[in-house]
Length: 414
Ligand SMILES: [Zn+2]
Image (cartoon, rainbow, N blue to C red; front, top):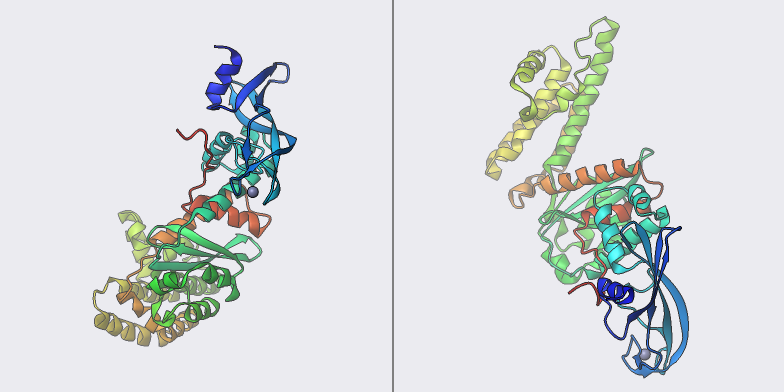
């Protein structure tokens, strides 16, 4: 077997495509493969499949997977046809998608690596520029989004996430059943979700049974306006309610700590995370130590914490009636607590209570959204922050979209 046949086999080239010439540039560490086409072949337009004469040729180059340690480049003079219906059209080559300067196999490799490492790490390893690597990722996302089907999504989660320290946000819509991100929008306004509703079919909108979100008016407005009977389907979920309660406990702790300190008392020093932690995550020894502090009724922080923990039992009830009674008695306690941050959250919970209790109709757990959120935080860490929201959106779709990302070509797929 000669080298031309060998490379043609390795590439999976089938007639009329063949390798005409192999050039080794050992000093540069490169292999150049020249793909040839028979001159007299009859071609059809890629759009309408009508026969069309060759208009001219374009010299093109694609980066392919390395051959051992050698960068491997594929060259071809690609015919452009003059279609009677479509004018000048370049024929499609079987080893790459249109407009890509990489073969499909090379892109597939880069995509696999990018699932594990940052764009810069992959770019460095594959000797790509950062823009080339980011381009492969963006193309993969566009491809994956275009392949999506309009399936029903019974449970949606809507959440915000920041992509920079200075309070820049994107809105993330996720499919809670399949743990994947459906949509990423700029900012966190009511209009942020417009593009999402537009992309949903009427059937999909009707099929939505529950939407988990935070008590945030712009999102509430968007859901009630766009989903049929949206108001009944909103569920202010455990995760978000807990976050508000935790913030309130922390506010109480901070001001109490400041006051105690001026009297030389350091009781609350270094305890911040203990008050916010899920009790199930304590070791027995830690829990005993923490309880000595948490049971001191003279501490405002301890009372705020008890109120938070008491409210959290809401999600353990099996029946709405018992949960309602639990909430009423909790609310009376909260409102008389003389702890301003807790009273504020209590009033907010009271105002939105109907849609917290929708949990008993749509027991949406936020486990999926939390998992997605953890991945988003990891992506942020991997990229060491994002300069623009567009890059951040691409990365979220790439890692959390559950998309079919790989290029499809007629080759390499046997
Ligand atoms: Zn045509």
